[in-house]
Image 1 (cartoon, rainbow, N blue to C red):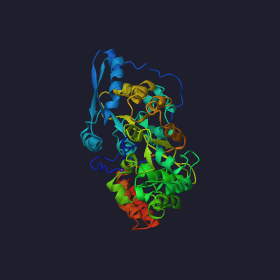
Image 2: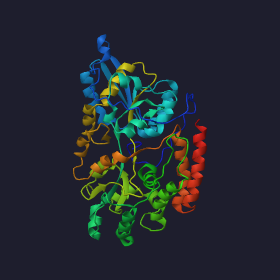
Image 3: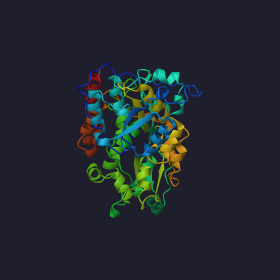
Image 4: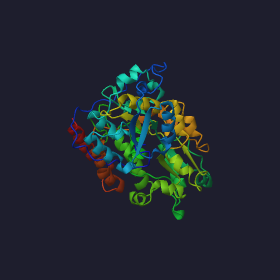
Length: 437
């Protein structure tokens, strides 16, 4: 997920004081397909001189990385890693300040919506040649994530973890109504019909929740309708296209036409995730990160399960994940790379996965994550990565994310038609994208 926690849209402010170095362009992948072992053996480059080097490592909710840092330091005794843990709500604001002052951490977490802004402004180290010289095999990570942290044919980050969105459901409510559980054969029609049967106004139970959430909801239904949010070259909005309008309308119809979803006001007062864990919601879309939360809920942990998202015209789901990047101003780029290379290893992925949290990006290490939630069909999240579309971004993603919130709420409340709202949003987003050049 964008912040490894549920969210509506990003409201990150612009880096107005930054010097714009280049315009954004295609995020084409530059995968290395070598399967050979890295040339280097991961030994500490500082060990040659015996000098001990301290590098800083920035992120949020970094508890799952404590053992990873310990393991790295054990094999690299001359590199000390100092973790700088910042709450997510303050992370990117603090990072903006550090970027302007040239004091970003040596190694840091980056998310998709902010990546192009930092890479495009020369704030991140280009890792392309380093990856090639060390023969780091990028095919070990989902291609969509490698692409997410690439810009203008250059690699700037190594995927850390990933998340996709699934259809969470309450098995008890399904059993009470004698309805079969969702599976890979489900489409929009089956979801709607099941939601109608599961909705029970007398008990205050809704069959489905259709909140105005981008990553969890309408980005996915737009893809399922055959649409897109932003063109591959990051120059054009897809919101005003018929397919996107269809994907948005599928969700608003569940509120306004079929009456199987709470209203926007109700979901603003009580989040769908809370309705679900309290037994008042039969189905909703949520990320792989929700497995950790639901598993901790004593009442719901054994009543819930998850399936792949239902199809519209086709299958579609957005994938996002964090990347490890290096500050362009790092005074210890070699040591920072040694750490990033280790963070991208299977060993580090498996150590982190055992702590819970996000799905590790290194292919094959998902088993440790799945073992944390054996009662759920959580493999659905991993299976969907095969056809997932990268989270939509541009140089200043936060600008048009704000437009989404301002304009689409009128469609969700019924004050404006979906088509009119989508066309207005498309026009505003196109203006924002043009201003990025």
